[in-house]
Length: 198
View (cartoon, rainbow, N blue to C red):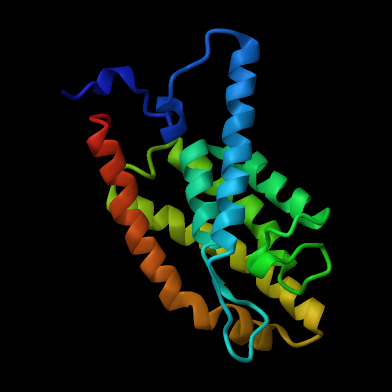
């Protein structure tokens, strides 16, 4: 039975979880969601395949970052990816391939995850995760933000021209991004549909 009237258009998937009845409970719930989003991204980062000739592996963390932002909303999504960044920079080995620290050439992508999570979360609050085409648009914009930070950072870290950094850290990944986008296009709207909420 659809209960569309009970779910405001500004809701994200995390808002459908049971609500806490106290302020402390609500904050605890938010902290658990944030920590869970960071942990999911850290786990997804271990699904990693090296790309010959590039310091940027193919991983699940980009997809996880975009999904976390979309599912949690801008504030909690950015906080989750901010926690992921801060803990990894401090030494927790949960960046791609079990690495950590802020000195990696690929650290710009991690910074981009925070911004992308905020963007996809804000778009989800406007219903961008409820239809396949809008979901694709949100994922594409989130990916663009990640590349907009990650590629220039890679160019700086490797001391190579921006065009060379793009060939090392963007072009080889576009087909994979399209596949992830297709997965999100199916999964997110389907989740809303299965929950009977629009």
